[in-house]
Length: 163
Image 1 (cartoon, rainbow, N blue to C red):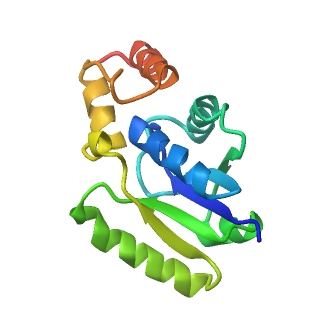
Image 2 (cartoon, rainbow, N blue to C red; image 1 turned 135 degrees about the vertical axis):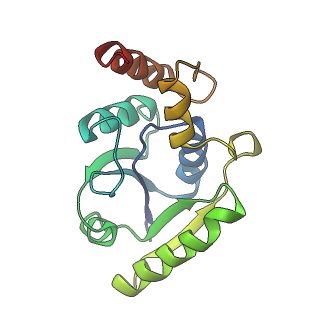
Image 3 (tube, rainbow, N blue to C red; image 1 turned 90 degrees about the horizontal axis):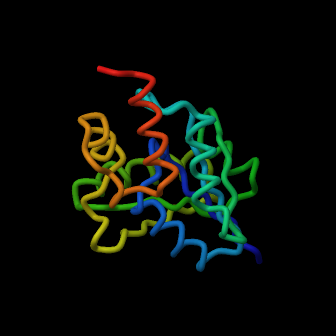
């Protein structure tokens, strides 16, 4: 049975921690969909099209990975894409309670989808998109946390939105 997994998130922006999880998950599943969420209740720095484009650039060399934006409930998108597994990243113990709640509610909404938790490599456990955004917006160098296309997007954003 071919297993399709979905790795959802806002990816605002994609960090090396996300890339690490995609790299490892792509070896576990026949098909992996990086699902870029439009409706999260969070205020995104980059719009959905920009986040999808950056993710597509970053994951273009992965044969079994596709990137897609989505709106609405993740479980509905998973059903539409015939996905069997939702991948969630756990950086720290503090993530665990929230992620278990999400897994439980997703299971209640769509009983055939399982959630699998993956921890990033040790060097990425402290890297989050929100911290990377803060560093970039305050003029810091984020090159050690993101791909060159993301760093370029931050530069363009800052040039278009001077303080």
